[in-house]
Length: 467
Image (cartoon, rainbow, N blue to C red):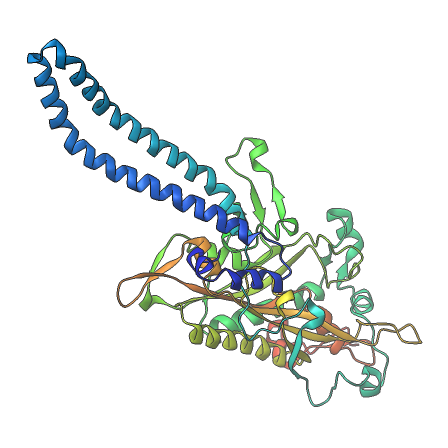
């Protein structure tokens, strides 16, 4: 959630920020509602102050008038009674004014909250402006000395590569048909070495982030309350991507949702807390099952392991002080962890600076990492894919957007409470990472070499499917 005071001080920044992110929200209407609410609050406060003043003054005045009435003659009695009635009516009139102001505030609260929840965090000034993913800017790329994504796989390895679908079928690593029978489209069942490979890359990533980079391992619920999805900024815009558990229809107190990332649980654990500055930053990592409906993705990557409804992900979250330089340092360090893992897995990748139109509502900045996947891309004359980049990681800076929604604060050196800032990053998500892993490490005999760094988590095996 954005800072309402900042919106009042510079509404154009937020109007431009929403436009840059292609988000349609009526900020002018919010400002009008805010002005009306503030006026009602002012009336309420002023009237309550008047009530306190009057309550001190009226008692003696009313007592004096009643005393005068006892000895008043008929000529002055009617006048005194009118004065007494007017004084006795003042508290009731003031109470009615307060109640009307309270009702006006309550009536304005809900539409204001609805609009506030839709206003995105403006992108940082150094984020490139653009309409969507097509306008993202490549920062750099990395590959081993033995492979260049700019050249064909066949020209460098001496054989036409198989797609990951062909490889998993050849080595019986995944059963799509039976999984679809159980869960419907975009489901899969990892089998044998497929499951071993999946678990190995996840454990490797989890061990690296927790043992080598000192992130605290934390387990989190993946079934959460709506306020947790709202608090982390995945609702309201992302509601159509979440699986909804309608518990309220079965007599429970509230509905629940399956999370699409461990970030939701990691941030939600600290909602409504006030931390000590000395305890920051919190550096948290989790390994959780994630669920996404992939609404709006009909016809996109329908086959294989790239775009699926259920997956497992190692996620890292940093909760830090409200300091832009510190936040950028954490962001760079998080990206470096993802790069380190991909380099150990010997997977070519590139870093993309996401433009404003590809950021989403909650991000001030986001860097995506895409791996080279030989089995993706347009088909050549021989009806073989020519290879393409595919997203595997995403690292975001969110300033105080989530923490403000979650009411997550810290006490600074002056003992003033300040909203924390937050960041998150994909350490590794599987089985999507298996797509480049299988395709890039396939051998001419059809086997798949296991990268040396991964072998300790694969029982020291060197390959899959070798004779």
